[in-house]
Image (cartoon, rainbow, N blue to C red; front, side, top):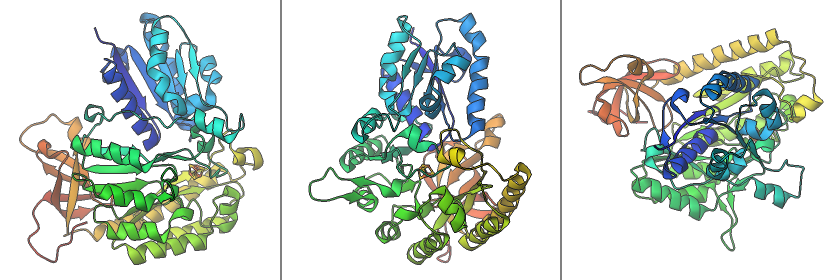
Length: 471
Ligand code: SF4
């Protein structure tokens, strides 16, 4: 009987991609996916270290697995991803029933480690070198960008795929653990990315999201005589038949070049969507965060995008309550949110992460109540802007890539020919409408009737007038 696996994924899109590739590799090794921990022979937690809360959830989930291990000692429990790289022995100490710990830079070893545990070895630990544990080349080599042949069966929607353009990060923002757990910045050769996107197109994929912690610092130096940047990569991928939408996340403000912005403005398949975290509107705080730009430079970047890309949707991230953030610093962040007119922003309350410079150097001196108030206020300001921005779409026709049934529809028993569907416009706006479930994976026109801050509501409808624009 084939072994059954279950992967629980938390955290960013990098983890979503890693889980998909692991699933594809396990499928090829004859494993079968199941949808619950209790039915699995192999239970993997793909973990995140960015927030304390996410880590605590994993420890409690691991705690709950003790009884499964007692009842079925053959069950293999693995912790993979960023927490595995950061916490290692601590995980074994807190959850001694864990069999395997594998860091994100060592995932290609996972199938072999599973075999070893099955034959009685273990517990096993496989992590990359710490960033100070060797020269740059040996540290880099210990963080292998995990790649595996893509399988449509391993993706929730075969028509949508994430593709790794680069991994790791060398920016060392003082609050962030990513450079330690994901290793040095490494770009994949454009040729390999292109081959992967061609394979995806052959599998029926129509939307590709290029992924990197700072994807716009992409640099391929493997081609003799020139360095390929993200704009060059987009131009190459744009030529691939079958691919209809190209996106890229996440961007660093410092690398938002005119050339890249122009390529978004001129290549019709590239989404006019930019996720560029600002983090703060105060130069003093940005400096303490080691972000490498000023609020003025960030605003100029927004102007350059809006002057070049029609109807650009720009989204951002902000941290409130960073150590030393005064009311005046915070008000400068408010001013940036108001001026930025972001489609939406992700707003976080600062919390120190062990292993980061900020946790080491700065006292977490903004009281929790102040962080909470700033968080709520900033959210309210952003939500009002998002609502206003979404209202512009009412009455217009948008092209929507249908992702499947909405959460509401999934809770109801299916009856009749239509369900509530959810999809996204090319500029990443969420659209909800009724339609037949077979539309999943197709790009279709929807007329927008109503808008909320995070969602547009519409009807399946073809465009009748020239005045209606599509997004
Ligand atoms: S750019 Fe800064 S916040 Fe983003 S992954 Fe790198 S260190 Fe973290």
